[in-house]
Structure formats: structure tokens, C-alpha cells
Amino acid sequence: MNNLSVTKALLEHIQISLLSLIIAILVALPLAIIISRNKKLSFLFLNITSVMQTIPSLALLGLFIPILGIGIVPAVTALVIYAIFPILQNTITALNEIDPYLEEAADAFGMTRFEKLKKFELALAMPVIMAGIRTSAVMIIGTATLAALIAAGGLGSFILLGIDRNNGTLILIGAVLSALLAIIFNFAIKILEKTKIKYIFLTFIITTFALIISLLPSTIMGNDKIIIASKFGAEPEIIMNMYKELIEANTDLEVELKPHFGKTVFLYEALKSKDIDIYTEYTGTVLTSLVKTDASEISTDSEEVYNLAKQKLYDNDKLVLLKPMQFQNTYALTLKKDFANKYNLKNISDLKKVENLVTAGFTLEFNDREDGYPGIKKLYGINLKVKTMEPALRYTAILAGDIDMMDAYSTDSEIKRYNLVGLKDDKHLFPPYQASPLLREDLIIKYPIIKDVLEKLSGLITEEEMIQMNYDVDVNKKDANTVAKDFLIKNHLLEK
Image 1: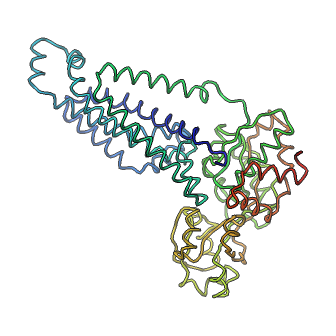
Image 2: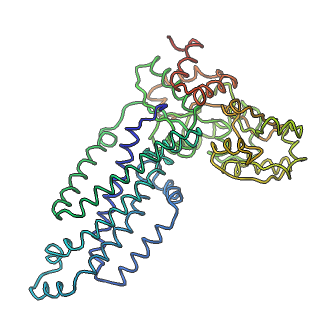
Image 3: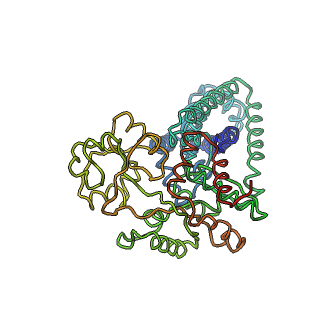
């Protein structure tokens, strides 16, 4: 599974879902009990929580990143917000629908609010409360697939990787297991609805205790390994494995890999917060996406771009960008060969004569970046009909004829796989994008040897070699670690 473990992803998904559900219950149940007798207060809280549910989950995750960072904390926070409403609504409804005559009789016997709650109210309301918990559980499990977007893991990792690689099998693994998990949770909670209240509380306590035990290794116990993460895609995974092999062959350090950890900003934030130690970044991406850089500062000279990116990363966050590899994974506009031949399209400038005939499929990122479509419009004076889509979907769309052109990375294996051609950036819009190891200064201070070990790759890997390695993983289905080791052995950086 290219370093993706079904068992690990399933366990992460269960942990995230259970933790979110337990917190939601601990918040919503007492709150509902307290406010259930006050109609105005109940109405206010129900409206607040229902409004929170209308906010798209992806937007919530994005809002929490600057405050809570990435990983399990913002993911659980967002899921709890979604889970509170059904539990709160059902608990308030159930308590308010208890027969008034029972309440009057309890008052006549001099029962306090707590005694009534303990003696009969919770018992009578429990089936409806459990139905709300069941609704929340199913909602959480489905929404938890988005946790993979912010490096919290779970079954969403398979879905995102499947989309990235246009692999339906991976998408089905994530989707089917998530659906099965929801069915199991739904069935288990439905059984609990019919049991005695003391068994429900006992189950809750045991589940909470088991969850705490399962989370201990990744929280309290810590991790002394060097953690190397990667973005989505074959290329970052291959390079990540090269780092691992080089470090373990030349030092006594142990490496833990976190493949397909997330997108650029998430990895960058994780590196700064010490959730990870190393990942591969591209020089052009640093200047256009990660540090504030005026467009006039960005050169087309690869050495100048590297030096500027290196300096800004260190000045801003004390991060160290090591010497880059040879290949550049820059942006490219690609088309089907027959379409390019039909209209004699060789340079981006040539698109001007067919701009009314071309439908482009761009990623949201390329459609928004200054060195993407906005730059094309400004520098080349070209306006196209654009459809925005996820990266892997562009290839499906261009093969189906839904789009005529798409943005791509120059080392994408799909360019070779689908016999596409790239247009020459004849006005030099795209800056150089050389791959470099990015790490914190404190890691180099602690382990100085890491710098020398990783820079063994400096100046190596041609564009043709990277395309072939990506092709071997994406198309020939070779393991990324095997491809990485083969390259290192071939270049005498690793013994057989």
C-alpha cells in the first residue's frame, strides 16, 4: 500500500471518532440537562449549535489551523462542534417530553431535581438520547475522513491518495471501510439503547479508558526518532525514502516516515511546531507560497532563487533549506499531442490564437497563484475558459475530452503515461522549483551529521530520472522504498 497501513489508518479513524464522540457527549449531555427547563435558553443553544453545523467542515478546519495548528486537535475540535447538536437536541426533547404527571408526583414526594434525574428522567429519556448519540457517531465517522487533510490520519488518507494517484482501489478502501465503521458504530449504539442505564454508563467508562490507553504511545510516551514526512504523490514519497536510507546507513539514528502527510502549508506548520523534523520543499514554492516575497524579487536563475528562499526561511522561522537536487519540478501547461499538433502549439504564447477554443483544467492552487493562471493572464495576455478541480482529476478530464489543457508538474509520470506534451514557458513566468530537504536549525545543532548526509543528494537526480522513478511507482506499481534504494545503489550512495 505504499507505506499506507490499513490497520493504522483504521485505528487512527476510530481514535479520532471516539475521542470526538466522547467529548461531544461530555459537553452536550450536561448542558442539555442544565438548560432543558429553560425554553429560551434551550432555543438559544439549539440555534447556535445548528448554525455551527451549517459551516462547511473544511472551512472549520482551515479556521482552526492558525490557532490550533495541524493534526488531531483541530480535527477533533471541528468534529465535536458537528456532533454536539444532535445530542443536545435529542436530550432536551426527551427530557421535556417526560409525562408531566410523573414530574408532579415526584414533586409531591419532595424529590430534588437531581433525584428525579437519577430515579426516572434519564432512564425514560435514554432511548431518545442514544438515538442522538447514534446520529452524531455516524456523522463524525463520515466527516473524519477530512482529518487526513490536516495530517490527523485516518481512512481519509486512502481517499486523498487515491484521488492524487487516480487510483480507484485506494478510494474504495477508504470509503468502504469508513462506511462499514459507521454501520458498526450505529449497530452497537442501537443495541445500547435497549440496555439498562447502568450498563450504558459502564460501556462509556470502559470505552473512554480504552481510548486513553490507545492514545498513550503517541502522547505521553513521546518519540525519539527522526520524523520525515512527505506531501501527497510518488515523488515526495520516493525522496523521503532516500532520506531515510541515507540517514540510517550513515548514522545511528532511527527514522520514522509519515508519507502523504498533507499539503504544503500543513507540512510547513508541522515542521515549525516540531510535529515532524524533515520534509522536501521546492525553492519556487518557498517564495511563492510560504514566505512573503515580492514578485520582482523572484528570479528565473535557479541559484538566485535557492539562495533567496534559504535566507528568507532562516530569517522568518530559523528553518534550513539544504542544497537542492538537480531536477526542477516546475509548472507546465500540457495538452494532448494531437490537439497541440492540430493548432501548432509549442509555446504558451501560441495559446493566444486559440484562447477562445481552449478549455483549461486547473487546480485551485494554480488558478490562484501569481506564478499560475493570474500570471499567465498578466504576462501573456491570455484569457481562457477554466474549470478548477483536484490535481488527479485533471488527467481523467483531459483523457475524457472534458478539458483541452491542464496545469501539471514537469516531472509528473502521467505526462509520459498519457503521451501529453508541454508548452514552453517562452516568457519565463514559472520560477525554478528545485527539490531540497527542509528542516529546523535545532535539529542540525543536535545532529550535525544530518546536513552532510542529506546533501549527498545535492546536484543529483535529473528530470528524466525523476520522471522515470515517478512512473515506476505510479504506473509500474513499484514500492517507493525499492525505487529509492535502487537509485541510491546505482549512484554508489548505498551498498547493496
